[in-house]
Amino acid sequence: MITHSLLRFSIILIFSLSSSLLLSCASHTIQQSAPLNPHSTWIFLPLLNHSDSPEAGERIADIAATLLRSERHINLLPTQIPITDAQLPELNTQKLVDQAIQWGKSQQYQYGIGGSVQEWHYKSGLDGEPAVGITFTVVDLTTGSIVWSATGAKTGWGRASLSGTGQELISELFAGLPLTE
Image 1 (cartoon, one colour):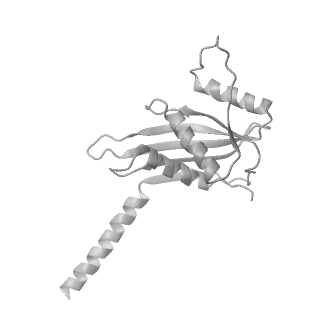
Image 2 (image 1 turned 90 degrees about the vertical axis):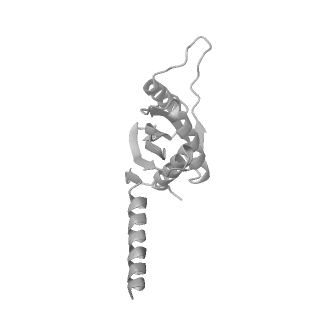
Image 3 (image 1 turned 135 degrees about the vertical axis):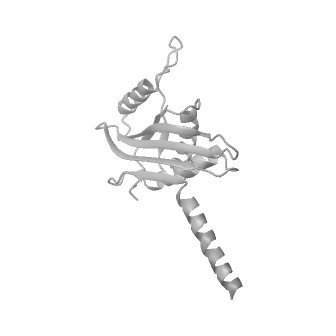
């Protein structure tokens, strides 16, 4: 009798702890919007890097572009801002975003997807869990208005990779992107 009660209590305790741990490691906010056409022309805008990790925006952009093409079947093209040999590369990413939007408009693209990186690192401590924080926005390039946005944060477990945790978060955020059939 005592063994059966102890077993039941153990199962309930394990279920409660694992449920609370799983629910506490990620958070998302996704804007509801009208469905967007995945067959329109889309460009990927530079991501603003607000994290302490160099080139985190470029890393996330590569993962995000692949997921948009493979999971959401979006006709996503790279942004090609013309730079002459005499010019130094632009280091102000907000200017890069503005240039990319202007270039997309001149090429008559419909949507631009961009955003920012807030967090992209391993936490300090014994386990060194990966921590990721990302915001994505879709801009209608014909009107300049933001038609969809999503933000999320996620931490992985001690043996999880940073890019794997980032890929999971990006996939979860893009799952909320409403697309027409």
